[in-house]
Length: 280
Ligand SMILES: C[S@@+](CC[C@H](N)C(=O)[O-])C[C@H]1O[C@@H](n2cnc3c(N)ncnc32)[C@H](O)[C@@H]1O
Image 1 (cartoon, rainbow, N blue to C red):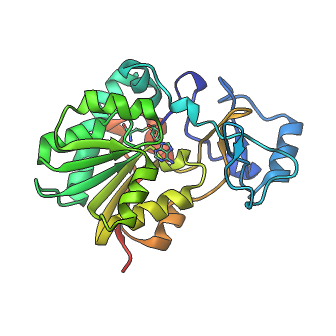
Image 2: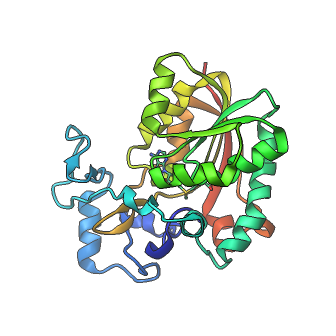
């Protein structure tokens, strides 16, 4: 599934809903919660974690949990080379990374192609592009142009090498904001295994909305539940419902679960894809 690698990001089990906030550290996937942890979860249920970039608190105006402060850890997405990037982008979920890469990439590109009309004239955003796995496939199939947006400088740098196309460039979200503020719009956007990891997904969703032209299409592939990387607890769910959040700015067009024959049982059960159209 989405990001993890050595930290073992896994789909958040449905039982985590009972606790309101589920936390995972490395290799804790199947470990039952202790009473203390459940108390902490109850105490923090529904409240955002306290995210920081390094030492600086990002949004001190947001409600902070009085009992549990977690530090957002985007460094999990810093990788040294393409093999390391692949391991954190598609973690082995009962299926090795290499096999997932080979089977899921064309399958996801098929899904996107069915939901979004893509021509050589199309400009689209791959939000959280990683090393450009899907961007590369879409450019090869449709000859479109892709702006890969990612918070990780190393992913962005590796993406240029991996995609190797003049129809592709990468930038951080802040550069996309600058382009949006100057009136740039795109025809469509995709975001694959990303929104579950975003610390303030309302900001990412607003950015996607701002970047899309009127009635522009958006394709999402995501965990049902959240997996925000933290220093103290590894991957954490804050209980936010990404599909519901998206539905405020976008009209749901089609949705489904990844087909079992193209992925693993866990992914087919605990993740969704959905296509949207920007609200007018
Ligand atoms: C699991 S990887 C998926 C990469 C790619 N979409 C794919 O499927 O091959 C998640 C990517 O999202 C990026 N990311 C996480 N939070 C982000 C944010 N708020 N804005 C942009 N990119 C983000 C990470 O750096 C990482 O490259």
